[in-house]
Amino acid sequence: MKPKFIGVILIVTFFLCFIAGNVISQETEPPTETEQSIAVQVETPRRVTIVSEKSYNGFLQPRAEVKVFANIPGKIVALSAEAGQKVAKGDMLAQSSAREASIAAIKAEVTLSVAKSQLTTTEANAQTRVETQLVTAKEAVAEAKAKLEETKSLAEIRIRNTLLQAESSLKVAKSNLERSKISSEQGLERAKAEFTKTTSDFDRDKELHEKELISDSAFESSETRYKLGKSRYEEAVAAANQFKDGSAQLAVEKAKAELVVAQKIVESKGWEREIAAAESKITQAKANLVTAQKLVDAKAWEREIAIAKSAVSEAEEQLKLAREQVNQAAIISPIDGVIAQRHHELGDYAKTAASSGQPVYTVVAVDVLKAVWTVPVSDINRIKNGNMVLISTASGIQNIIGTIDFISPTVKQGENTVVVHATLRNSVGMNVENGSPAPVDNSALKPGTSITISIKTGERKNVLLLPRRAVLQIQNGKGNIFVVEKDVARLKQINVGGIYGSEIEVSSRLAQTTRVIADDQHQLKDGTSVSVVRD
Image (cartoon, rainbow, N blue to C red; front, top):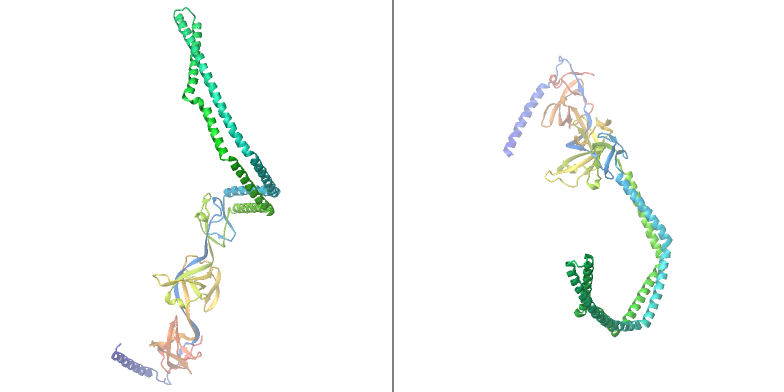
């Protein structure tokens, strides 16, 4: 604003004040003796504490909202709770079929029985078995040593005898081949002669049969002899051909091959390999003996027994879990609260939370509610955890006391606000009336209700208040009042502040015993005779 303009305003203001002063002085001339006293009502100032506050809009949430799933998958066979019903922690809400869990329990019982039987067997036989292994290992070492001595003394003789046997087998094979060849040739001659005779007889009998000079049976007999002779001749020819194509010499060739192998074994001193193998078996037997001795020294049976006992303990634990699964067919409320929703009907198949199934119930805890709202970043420094707030609803529930218990450490992007929570009991609580707490029942509060949250932002004590109607001509932080002094009305100018409902703050010094006229001031002027009306 320009300086010249400010100066003009000051001059105008001074002039108006001067005129107003003249008017007041004219209106407040001392009363004459003939004026009659006017009856008036008076008020005295009162000192109060003024609390400044700021309001925000929010909503209520339950203290907890729990999705209750089946503990084991199965068909729902019983429903014990409905939506809207109050439940306590541990109350049974529903029950699912325990058939699969019962089967698992039976299997666990069988496994436990087997484990116990195995433990009994292990405790009875483990030490004996380990000690027997040691004895067996010692016997194996002795046997391997004896086998080595036998091998050293007999292996060369046995291998050379094998060579002699191979040579003898070859001679026998060759001799047999020669005899077979002679026998085959002789057999061929006999078969040929017999076949020639039967052929001649058959040709003759055939001609006679055609002339009906011999009977059918005689001809058939001649034909049979012919066929038999032919078969024998063909067999003799085949046997003779074996010597021509070399197939009859297979036995000789086999004997030759065996002789070659025997000769090579002798030439390579194969008995030395047998002796080395026998020595290797002694080494292996001794290693087994050391292992068996260590098992005995370490009392390995104790570890086997411990493992068997561990198997029993594990089987017992599995049985315990399986039986717990059977017991968990009952679906229990985990909290005190109210059934907000039932998601399944009787006969539906309920899944567990782990299998991403649908919950059976939703239970909300409404004994304590949570007020949720957002506060601008510019206001967040005014509040702290533990601060009290007043909560009201549009339905007429007012001044419910809550306690701030959460201020988000982050700012919501795009809104520049911070989320704040306060808790309040949804039961008989305290309402604030005229600055004093009074009992109130909050149990009608519902999660999801829109609310107004009022937060104290400041406090001024010993603030002086007058009825708003007692102060006249309020302008520029000043006002006029009439006070009673010795049955005379006196006009006074006072400094005023904020208006609080039907009252106004007085910032001037004013005794609390001051009698301030509160009505019908239009009849008064400074010096008017008045009489105070007593209530």
